[in-house]
Every structure is written in structure tokens, then in C-alpha cells.
Image (cartoon, one colour):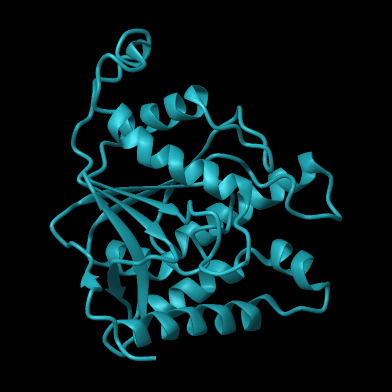
Length: 249
């Protein structure tokens, strides 16, 4: 596959990012390689999970699954240098509802963390073909794009500034959508690859649930991450890369 000339390098003139996704492991399928490079360069990255992925493993009841996946998410995040990991409590895995309640929660988090860059996962209907994207990914990704503006408008969710004491934050400069079928930017990765593999492999219970008890999480993670980043590099400059669709603010 030849390089795509329209892909630009990701911006570097920022210090804080908040990554917001629906489930534990959403960031580990490629975005974590870029995140590992960012934290190694001294940038501050925080994670916000809308659910604990409690409906994600068929053999585990939701309460048990939520505890396991939260633990695995915190471990995976730490392996790429992310030590602030928050979870929302009022949205159910698999049936996250679009609307003002979700936008309010995300706007509140953006006001707390005051990021310049927001990262989320593919919000489009498909992954670039006929493979349908999950409802949770679509809902959360779109809500992140909306909440970037909500966070800066004092007249939307005024209770955030009142009862919660969260002043408006107009400092979001970009929203970067990982795994979008319409990438515009790329982050080249090198040392972050091994850390990204470790981060995905930390979701061992989930990975074994996907492929059966005999599936080796580390082998699965290495195969997936290296192929994903190799494909990204082929579309960019020939070196491994994480691709994003960047929405300037």
C-alpha cells in the first residue's frame, strides 16, 4: 500500500490530554502505542472510561467482570505511563445512551482535567467496510466531540460551574479519533510498541474470553499491535504509526 500524502503528523505543541472511551481495552488496540510515546516525552495523559466493560465477557457475571476489567485497565494504563484512570458510574456497558446525561458527565471531566487534546475511539458506523461498529463506540465518540464544546460554554450545563465548582474550559484544541476509517494524521511510534503490547496483554482475562482459555494474551497482543501499526506506517511514511482522524476546535 502506498503512502497517503494527505496524512499529516500529529500536533506536538500540547501538554495535557484526556482519553475518553466506552470500555476497558478500547485504547489498547493501537492508540496506546502513541500514548506511550507521549508520556515518555513528559506529556500528561489521563483516561476516562464510560463503563467498566461489565458485559464484555460471556463467562463472567457483570459485577465480577467489572472488577476484573477495571483492574486490568489500571494495570494496562500504568504500562504506558498513565496513572490517572477514572470510571463513570451511571452508564451501562452495551447500552450507553446518547443524550445530555452523557454529555454532562464528559463535559465535567473535561473541565476537571483541562486537556488541550481529547482522544477517543472510532465513532463512525463502520470500521471502513461492512464491519458494523458497536453502539457504545458510536455513542461515546460522538459525545466526546460534542462535549469538547459543551465544556467551554457556561450556559450549557450551568450546574457544573455552580454546584460542582467546575469553571468552563475552552482549551480543547483538537479531538483525535483513533481507529477511524478516515484518518487525517499519524503519530510515528518506536519504543512505544513494546509498551503497547504489554498494555493490551494486561487485559488477559478479556483476551482469553475472546479466543478461549488456550489463547496466549501476549502472542495475541503482539500480533494485533504490530499488524495495526505496520498498516498505519504503510499509509504514512513506511514506519510504524498510530493513525487518527483529527478534528480541530
